[in-house]
Image (cartoon, rainbow, N blue to C red; front, side, top):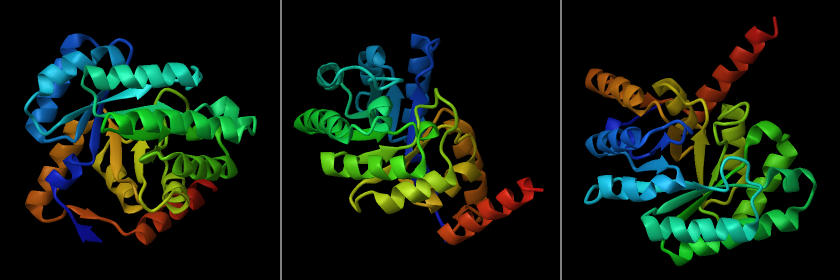
Length: 252
């Protein structure tokens, strides 16, 4: 186990404000919280970028947004245009949904071109691209392919889920994505990371970003453990062993 800090965990969090019913007041409150806690980004819907950028101006917290959300089935041209507008409006990072249907169809060339076009636009604007796999729909072979294609296409992160389909971030998926992605790529755990232990488990198997809307609760517990000297990240081996134990219990 390795000790960590509340600050270090905060700097892994992309706080999500993506529900369709979220109001502008919700966006502004999230940004105020993020400024106070030192969150790395607030991830908002594309139409909310200007509001978030104004609320976060002068802070260390950046604005991120989603592209082709939540299904990833818009055209490449539309994704590129959406990315261009996002950066013009004040976003610094974009999370793009991979075209799952094309991946499942075996059209790897299309998927790679789609990712590369958005990556190039993001980098042209000085930003980062995270590629959302929607792992719930993929077997391990397809997850590995998505990692390879994202790496070749120049993405900066691979990401588990939108949070709007089934499933979410799991330890086995994160471990696979860390192993199969290029050494320079980050891994983002998103979907179902609702407490500190889930965040620490994700970090232990290679997650470098956490997408969550449970930020305040996670960091409150982190601060309490840090004060008590018990804020530690388990080793990868400890986390995987715990997963195996849980799996064995469920088998009975």
